[in-house]
Image 1 (cartoon, rainbow, N blue to C red):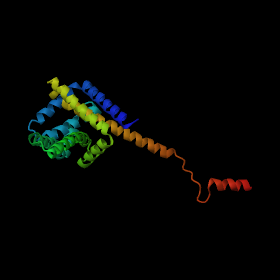
Image 2 (image 1 turned 135 degrees about the vertical axis):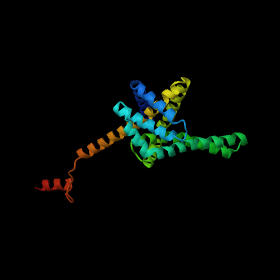
Image 3 (image 1 turned 180 degrees about the vertical axis):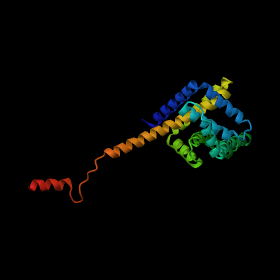
Image 4 (image 1 turned 90 degrees about the vertical axis):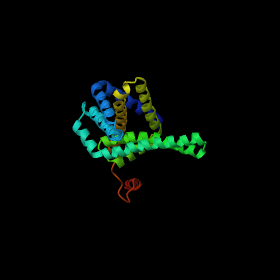
Length: 239
C-alpha cells in the first residue's frame, strides 16, 4: 500500500475510533472537555491543561475510566514541557500573523515570504506538538516526544496534511454546533490524535515482530569456509 493510501486509511480509522470512544463514554469525555475549558481560563495554564486532557483520554481508552492518579503523575512529570509546547504553538501563528500583517500594510515581498513560512511552520508545529502531547501522556520525555512527532510528520506528509484538515474540520463543526465546542471538541481532538499515535505504534510493533520472526526462521546453515556446494559436488563425483 502506498504512503498516500496508508495515511488516508490510518487517519480515517483513527477518526472513527475517536468518535466511537466519545460515543461509548459521553459523560467522561464531556467532563474532560469541560475540565480543559475551566483549567485553561488563566491562559498560561493551557499547556498543562491540554496535557491533562491527553492523559485522561488515554486512560479512558485503555481502562474505560479516568485514572486520576496517572493523570496527576503525568502532570507532575511534564507540566513544564507542556507549558513550553503551548508557548511554541502560540509563537509560530503569531509570527505568521505579524509578517502577513506587514505584507498587507507595506506590500513587502520579503514580509510575505516570512508570513507564508510562519504559516507553514505553525501548521506543521500543531501536528507535531499534538503527537508530542500524546507521547508526553504516555511517559516519554520532551525531546523524544518532539523528535518522534517530527519524524512521523516527515515520513507521512499526506497523513500530516490530513491530520490538520480533520482537526480543523472537527473544530468548525463543533463551532457551528456552538455548545459542542466546549463540551466535545477538546476530548474528541485528543482522542483522534491518541488513536492515530496508537495505530502507528501498533503497525511498527507488528513490523518489528514480523522482522524478528523472519530472522528466527531464516536458514542458519552456512558452508564452512573453503567448502562451497560446488566443492562438495566435485568430491562426490570423484568418488
